[in-house]
Image (tube, rainbow, N blue to C red; front, side, top):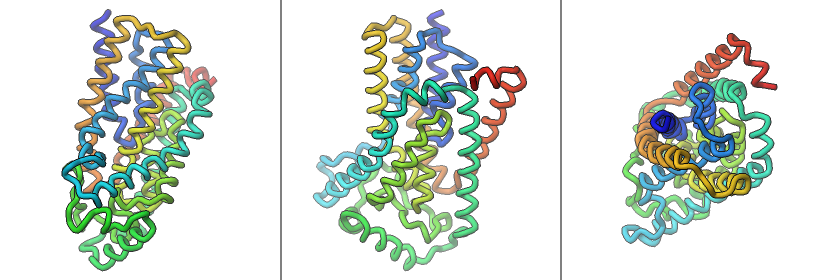
Length: 337
């Protein structure tokens, strides 16, 4: 029995690590996994587990982007440290909408929408949105074959004026302190008209727009990364800038969410956990961390050369299959009610 629960925790950790960062909904997939492979734990612990397991995924972002996110690094100049503090300020600004709305509506959404059918509908709906946005960008901008340097520079200058500090001041002359994952997008794949080509260019207005879209993730199946990436794309961010800002937003949001869920759990059942529950929690967090490292590297590399359309198609296919499964088994209406 213990080995079986350990295996289930392993599978859920893998699912969390992959789906937390890809725009396909981690919570939604874990609800679906639970429909077919339930953990033998209390309802209160399961609710805690599905959130706290995300702490492993957060650690993957912190480690992969540690140098970029560390404002105290001795390797950075004063200007670069100021740029790092500015990036953190944008992250805080982006977290405000979710913090205000999410805390107020968390319990209500859990009671009314935390089910497989809601997940399936959200997967399909936002899959269509992803495909629509990418088609819009393709028709509006086309593929940039050798984008004009003057156009890119002009766009960067306009963004710089809107930021608290200029783009040149943030980056220094040519030095860029990043995780090693951030490399320039190939010119042939970079639309010249992106207003924000790099995560360092995100300003207060854009951060608030992305933060507002992040509120949509309170609905299971929406995907926190998916909603923030959609917000970033609509606000004029490049795919890489939108994806990376989504990663950074996850740190305070998911940490705060985990603390909130832990507090609610302790208020319900106290601090006691069984040995099996502790084992499940540890396995889930560790596996989620290891898989998240690979998933983040994959996503950053993928969107440098490809659009989000494959993720949109995946969401639609999975959502339709889930709806068909429950409709075929006659459980569709019972789940909704």
